[in-house]
Amino acid sequence: MEAIQPSRSRRERPAKPALSRDGIIRQAVVLLRSEGLERVTMRRLASELDTGPASLYVYVRNTAELHAAVIDELLGTVPLVPESSDVGWHDRITRVLASYTGVLFEHPTLARSALVTRPSGPNYLALVDRLLSLLREGGVPDDRSAWGIDLLLLYATSIAAEHVTRAEAEGAPDHEEAFTAALRDAHHAGYPAIAALGSDLLSGSPEARYEWGVAVLLAGIASAPRPTIAASGPMPWSRTS
Image (cartoon, rainbow, N blue to C red; front, side, top):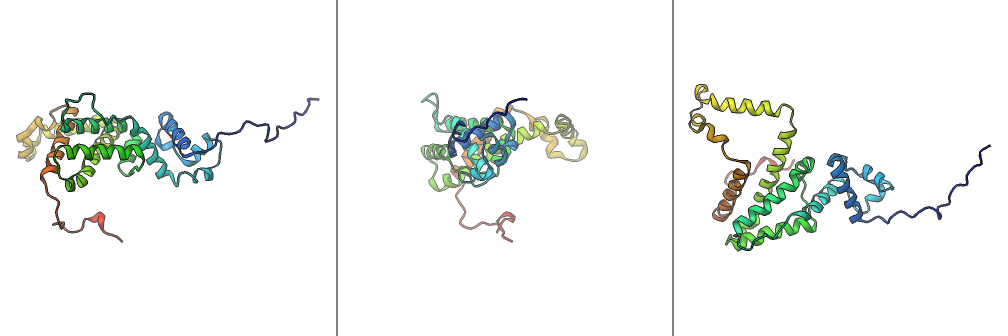
C-alpha cells in the first residue's frame, strides 16, 4: 500500500511575491504581448498572479483602469528627445507622434482601446508635457495648445486604430479594390469632383500622408482662435439624458 505523503504546512510553502500595482501592470503587459488585450482581464490576471480577483481591486479599480495603465506602461518606449538637435520643433512633434502611433500599431486591440481610454500615468503625462513644450517652442499660443493637444493625440491614435482594424477586417482587400473601382468610374456615375481628382485621391505613401496630416493640424492649431461660444450649439455627444 502506497504511503500517504503528509501535506505541507502553509509555513513550508514558498511565499508568493507581494502584490503591488507595478507588479500587476507588468504582468498585464506580459499577457498583452502573448495573448492580446482582450485576455487582459482581472480574473485572468489574478490567475497568473496566483491570487483572487478581489485582491487586485485593491490596486486597480476596474478593467478600464487596468488597460489605461497598460497603455501608459508601453508609452515608456516612446522617445521624447530627438536623436539630432538640428531637428526643428515641427519635425520633432511629428516624430514623437509617429512613435506613439507605432506603439499602438504593434497591438491592435490596444489601439482601439486607446481611442476611448485616457491614461493618467507618468509616461502619458510626459508625452503630453513634451508635446505642449514643443508647441510653445514653435510659438503656438498656450490657449490653442491646450485644445490642440487633443487633436494631435486623437489623430495619432485613430490612424493606428484605423489601420490595424482595416488589416484585420474580413475581405479588406476586396473592399479596397471596390473603392478604387468606384473612384475610377466616378465620372460615369455622376460625381464630377471625384472624377477631376481621380487617382490623386489615393496617391502618396502612408508616411507622407501621416506627416501631412500632422502639418495640417499644426497649422490650424497655430492660426485658428478658440471660439468663445460654439456657433453650432450643443453637440449630440454633449447632451445629457
